[in-house]
Image (cartoon, rainbow, N blue to C red):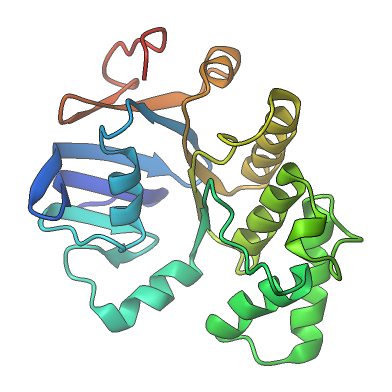
Length: 236
C-alpha cells in the first residue's frame, strides 16, 4: 500500500466488524500527522468500533489499514502493546484506578509500557500533569477530583509516551459545557504542538464552532467532509 509520508492513519477498503456483524463497509480515509478530525454519527453507527479497530481492540478482518507504522490487517497479539505505546487513548468514562493516586495511575501505564528508571518516570509524570494544568494533583485520589480534572488526568495518561495521535471517544460527553470547553481547548493545544487528534463527539456546538474536518458514520458507510457534504444539524 502506498502511504503518504505524513500519514498517521490510512485505511483502505476496510470493513469494521463488531463480532460477526459488519458495522462499517468500504472505509477509506487518511489522517495526516498534524490534523484535528471529528468523528460523528448516531449511537451504534460504528464510531467506537472504528476507534477500537484502530487501537487493535477489534481485529481488521477485511481491507488494509496502517496506523503509526503498524499494519492492522497483519498485526500479531504480541505487537499490540507496542502499537499502543505510540497512541494515546482517551475514554469518556475515565477508567482510572479508584484506589490509586493520580501519580500511581500514571506510573502504572509507564511500567506497562516499558519504563524502568524511577527518576525519569517521576519527571515525566510531573511534566504531563503540568501540561494538562494539574501540577498539584499527583498525590490526590480520583474521587477527590472533579469530572473535568479526572478527564485531564486521563489525557495526561494518554500523553505519557509522546504519542503521534490521540484517539478520543466522547471525551467531553459526561462534562458540563464550561468544563467540556476547557477540555476541548486542551486538545487544541496538544494538536498545535504536533499531535494528531481523532475525536468522536456528539457535541453539535463544537462542530459548529470549530471548522475541523469531519468523518461521519452513517448507514454502514464512513463519509468524509474532504470529499462529501456532511450535515451536522441532524440528530446523531
